[in-house]
Length: 109
Image 1 (cartoon, rainbow, N blue to C red):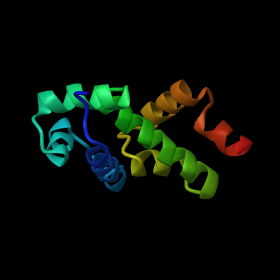
Image 2 (image 1 turned 120 degrees about the vertical axis):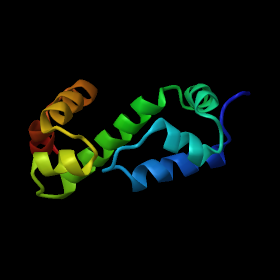
Image 3 (image 1 turned 45 degrees about the horizontal axis):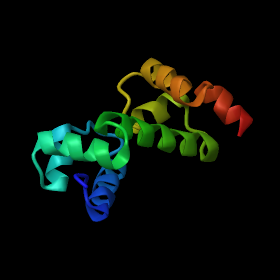
Image 4 (image 1 turned 90 degrees about the vertical axis):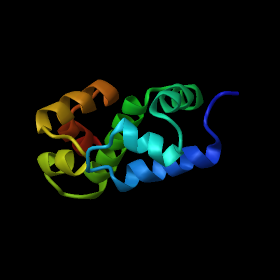
């Protein structure tokens, strides 16, 4: 009802994926959606079921999982290329969301 159109959500997903290694702000995401920041947060959460921040983190972890499976990049390099400023924060977030460490994930996949 008050969410964002599917086309807008696709644009936001593309924007986040294209900028996964950079800082992604709420202002940028609202701009992509062509709405105010306040309206964006409410409508995005209604449409997707998570906050914009959680959405970005989830996509970053998804990208990291793909890189852990498909490359021999170091965990630190993957953390930085997926937009985490510190590898420890990446490892903690990864374990919180997946239940395993990045190295264990790589070993087990």
